[in-house]
Length: 80
Image (cartoon, rainbow, N blue to C red; front, side, top):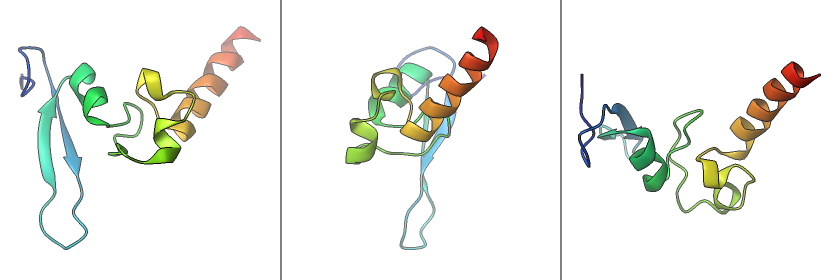
């Protein structure tokens, strides 16, 4: 079990790709801290500071707009 860098909960490895060819920055974070840092809980992309992400409907739940739309589509399939 890998622990979150910020608390004692189980964490996953999250990474921020670098565009200059250097290795990506990696963080071990639980879901709560990953969301606080700006990672999408659906696809894992780092999106903090991106207007499209921060004003998406799923932002307060930790999802980018494409992941939020997919999640809502899947839920509506079960409600129909």
